[in-house]
Length: 436
Ligand SMILES: *[C@@H]1O[C@H](CO)[C@@H](O)[C@H](O)[C@H]1NC(C)=O
Ligand SMILES: [Fe+2]
Image: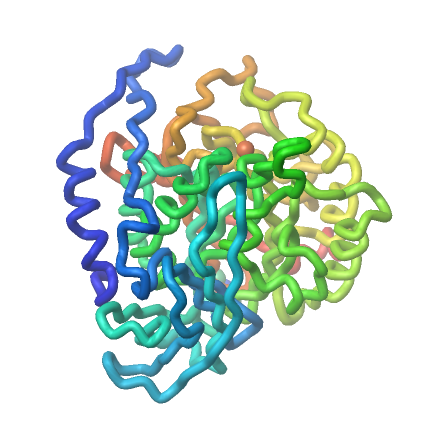
């Protein structure tokens, strides 16, 4: 997928690859050696670029045939995107909005958001941001019908494990990426957000990246910075209005005309009667399984988890108690979560037990952040937990047709991508015994 626009990142990735070194080797209970955390990578500060140069470019879906192009500049430039289907020739042009934020002593660059379209499905577009001539980007729109391939990875961070994971995802031929929260691990130090934007740009400028928030996105400091999600909401604007949500923290969208994806917010109100709860009720009531046979839900904190990490947290226990029944009644197919830095796949479950009409729960918080892996699991594994392993990696959900999807978990075997778990999933929309 080499394309114009990613040239600046190539030397960087090469340096990272050349310099990959294991921070330590960890011997696990199973008796095989697994590498430990790797060093963080810092790309560069915003000030180090040409003030007019677009950077940290990423794209996201807006409705069935539009895309939002988001980028940052250090200086004032026009918030305009020129685009077309051949390089250097742009028939379309659109303008948008600019925002910025302050966080302690940090002043962000100018954050530009422009919605382009209508666009043809499954088509490569070339685009230029802010009339800046030296960087041309390209993106491919998702197909309008099945099959479609979704990459899923949470708790990404920005370490040398992250770069390995990103390389595997880039090679996978995916159509759209889903990130179940915990993006940059900036953890209050805002230049890390800029660095994360640089790190993911080669991928995120080419395919839609759809994200929801994790605990690392909150960045609230009582009395000092009293609002939550300042950087996240300004930098990673998602298409919430299109699904009737009034918050960037939860929204839904359709992909390939057949998969309804619901991004929930684990760190905003979810109690019965809360705005998010009422929005979810309303969103699920509008799903037509004849049109979108697949329904997939994303949260950050998992509702099912046999890892020793993050047990007993409110976002897992209380949110599950409030919302699980809604998802069950709607016959949701799969729930993806992050938060745990390991992989775990459950069978279909509801109310703590195997249930053939419940969603399959999958934890995929193993993107490669600096906190390292969550190595400890409860023993013995309960029978609902079908596969669990603490390794970095990512997942691919290939929705083949209205009834069948293939899920593969790719472990980063050192730097090689190896399928360690795979399963066929059949949509509950076609299960007569599960008809709602
Ligand atoms: C859907 O795909 C599966 C797996 O390839 C295949 O077995 C099945 O026949 C397909 N169904 C339809 C309706 O094409
Ligand atoms: Fe988390």
